[in-house]
Image (cartoon, rainbow, N blue to C red; front, side, top):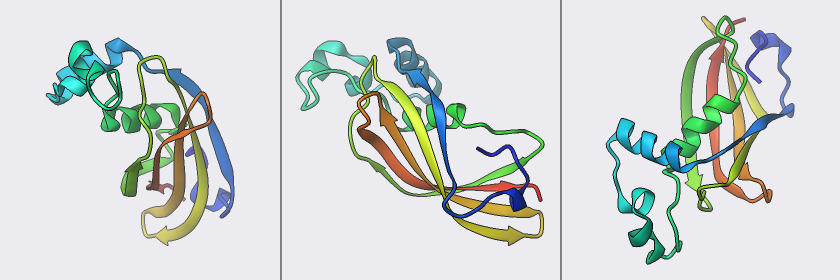
Length: 141
């Protein structure tokens, strides 16, 4: 998505990523990196007794995977500018396959480029949304 200069974008434009399946290894590596060893993510027996009935992916892991699914051309993306209104609307389980859909909602010129505001929907293979939010990315002119 973020692979063109600022002026090449239009409000209403949509983009969809490829997919990535969440694995048990993803949960363990993210726990190790972040220090978040909550048993809801890491303990099969504990999580089986939770309202989810099994382990779920960390919300921030899902957001991180989403950034990996986006096209981010290094000579175009100046900086990640922000994220607003994050809602984790459904659990992501081991074995779920995620896809990102972005829709351009606003364009704002800045001195060092332009900020593209997008609505982001991270959904699993069933089409059910798991994370909804607004992201802002500063791109080159």
